Every structure is written in C-alpha cells, then in structure tokens.
Length: 277
Image 1 (cartoon, one colour):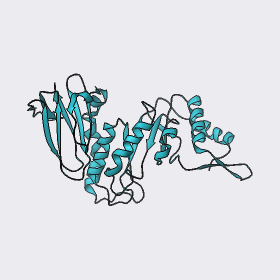
Image 2 (cartoon, one colour; image 1 turned 180 degrees about the vertical axis):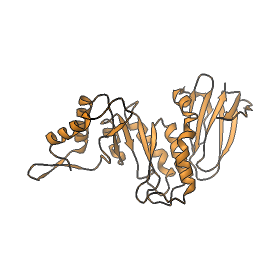
Image 3 (cartoon, helix red, strand yellow; image 1 turned 60 degrees about the vertical axis):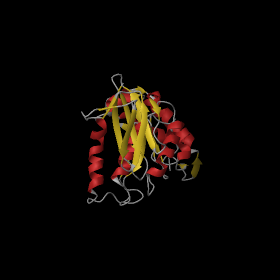
Image 4 (cartoon, one colour; image 1 turned 30 degrees about the vertical axis):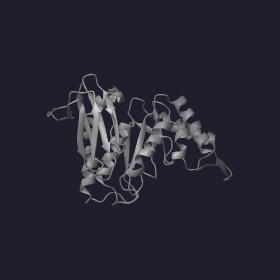
C-alpha cells in the first residue's frame, strides 16, 4: 500500500536528502516488486495501480533527484524480469522453480538463462539463492556453491543467500562454512576472470550439456570455469587450443596432447582451470 504520489514523493525526497553518494550503498526501491500495488487516498480509499508503471516512476524520480546513488529492485516473478530490470541500476531476482525449490539445481540453468537473456545489456544482476528456503534442512552446501559459480558463468554481479523463514540451524556446519568462506574463495580468481575477454572459440569441443562453462582470455592464459550441474559424478571432456593446464591456485601443471583434457567432477562441483596457449 502506497500513499498518494505527492506524499510518497516527499517521503522519498526526505530519505534521499540524508544519503551520501560517496558511500558504497545499494538503495532498494522495492522488495518483491511483482506484488500488486495500491494507492491509499486521503479518504482511505484504495486505488489499484499498475505496479510496473509505479516502479518506473519511482526510479525515474530518484535518479533525477539523486543521480549519484545506486538503486536496486527485487522480484521473485520471472515474468516480470524484462520490465522491472529497467527500473533500477542493479537488478535483484529469485525464482521459485530454482532459488527456493527443494532441489535447487535442476531448474537453475533454465532460470539463469532466462534472466541473462531478459535484462538490458550490461545490467548488473544479483541472483538470490535460498539458503533456508523452502525449509531449513533441504539445502546442500554443494548446491549453493554450484549456484554461485553458475552465476559467475552467466555474468551476474553477485548473489544473496536468503536465510529467513526459520534461519539456518547452528548444527548445519557445512553450510555455515560454505557461506562464510565462499566470497574469499571466489575473489582469488574473480578479478582476473571478470576482466578477461570472452574466449568461447578457444574450446574446440565443448563439454557435455550437464556442464555450465565459460572461458575468458586474460592475455597470459585462458581461464575456464566449469560447473557440473548433475547430481552424480561427471567427466568434463574438452578439446582446446592449449599446451598445458592446471587448476587455479595450483602450481601442478599438466601437458596436453592435441589439446584434449578430461577431469572428473563430483556432484554439483565447480572448478576453474588455467590453460596455457
């Protein structure tokens, strides 16, 4: 329920007046922005509004008043991705068919591909992953790690782990360890990876469909991020234009015969390889 636009605008302006553009803060316009909006008139009458238009109006106003601030908007509705992603600087999205599903990974690829293909080019995306949704006991650490690496492969800017609706029990030590350490793990390779140029042509024989992957050329080498989306052990097999390979952060380098490379992945496992051309 929103107040009449004039009142809402005054509240927005009062909030923006106290914000410092020099601080790295994300200002969220709306959470679950797909929920139908109504305006409450001064006499108490509720007037239904087109939510998409309201979000666009708010975004246009805040960018005019405070162009130096960064505004986000979040939705759980895949059907709203294309329109709502235009109403913010950074787009937050979750999907009930994957993010909040009992088994997260089976539909995750499809949902991420839909988001990547629907948002404006270059729009930063934060993809939500359910840490304790739909319940506090179904999520595996491997699923969350898989989701994080898949997000990187699809070019998203980051993730939020939804930890509400019961919160995570203290005895879930593997999940707590994953959550506390995943950012440091990713930051070991991410700065070089995100600066690299797309090198899909480097892979002459692509991995099986059960793998999500992305290759980037850093100038000195090609980094290949690969994620096994299967719930069983799987073998990555590729043919590349490279002479040797090693795991990122590992000094052990293996020579390649004719560029053929194989490696076994456990369920939902993700790895980053460094190939020397």
